[in-house]
Image (cartoon, rainbow, N blue to C red; front, side, top):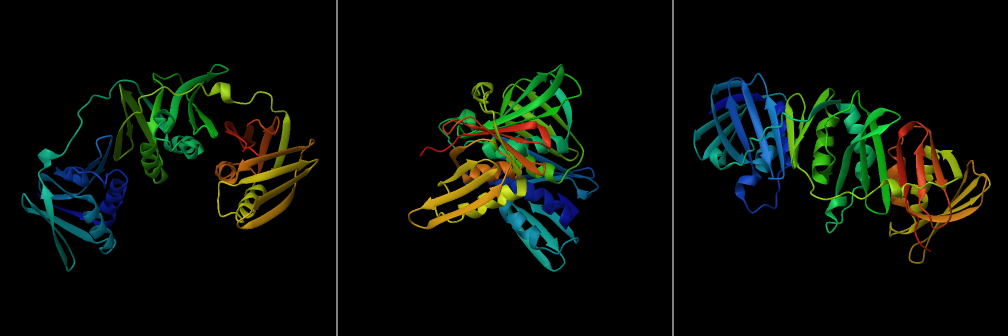
Length: 370
């Protein structure tokens, strides 16, 4: 195998691979990437057995076709330190050594046979639909921060994706919750699709978002049994799905929250962040003391001190309630408009948060006790 490729092109692909490789794996082959030079293309594949990432580099100068595997982290570390934009020459002198050469640098990397690398050949031709990359990225970003880290409740450790219908319009809806907060967002579909509800794992979500951040185009989505496939122009992501039943989230959405707070988004976000800074324990609650058109935010920690700020708001009631500051900041960071709307019922009931600039997303946050 022998080929030449631009440094920046292969560095980008190897960077994506780092998010897939399981560095704690006891199987050496899973720490490797598969390099396959064929025709005028180089295909790079990484997997942890649950997630497969495939990237195609086109118009590569392939002098001799072939394939091999080498350690992903070492190769990435070398490539990213070579001169940007320069050509890198790869050659497999024997089955166990891959030579990497650029300018005055030469490296010989250990290899394992490509025959040891696990691949999937499942047919994903059924249940396909296409969505704009920016729409999908927005959907995932609106929800991913609410995904649970509790491994004992695996069905909450991902985003629930399913098709919904509202006023005879079809939507792809995403939901995530850790039982303390919940995010719901939807995007309009041009037509009804064949798509069974799934729970997308957290690692897959963040890897997909990383790809979508640098891509503007269509994404083809197809799922079969326990897997889902995302196809971009030059990249493919195949993931196992979480096997579990997502809870009935509809019944958690507050129905009787009539006390509406409206405030400037940036002022609110910055104020909560400042007041929370006084506490060493970020799990300390930020207390809301709401009066007519006034919000007093305060934190009191016996070990570090206390802080208070007052905001002018729109509010016609009186209420005291406390929230985890991080939950509020996470929600605020995803809002598109200039204002934030929070709907309350009473001190012990969850709050409903809406974005006047995005009618397709809502958030629910549980109050803190005491």
